[in-house]
Length: 133
Image (tube, rainbow, N blue to C red; front, side, top):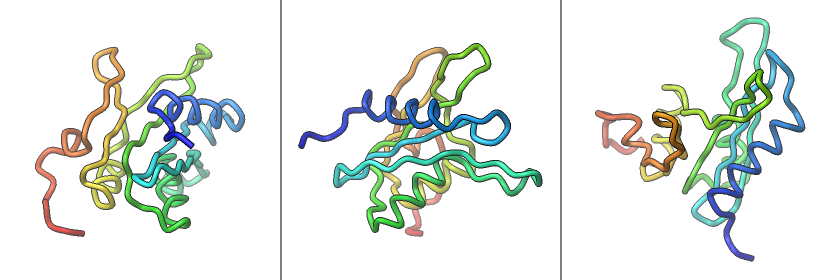
């Protein structure tokens, strides 16, 4: 079996969000490919107390952790816009920290000035300590 491409990873996140989108509850989905080639997905979950929300990237990382496969190769998150289109979004600051803590070499498929580009997580989190977590 050949590894899932970045494009396929993006499609998996879009498919999950298309299937599970609920306005105000599940508005973002993520997919990550581990260095082993396995793929894990996650769905943003929100609650009535705003701090109870969990980002899609964190959910995907949790799924990978549950499988014992936490070396992230590439991760992508998508949001469903009211106009009916998907858009790649950058991870929030908390998710950037989380991705870096587990895989400081990870690639994030990110959105930059209208372009979708792969970036190393440390480019999205400058100044992050190199201390092993």
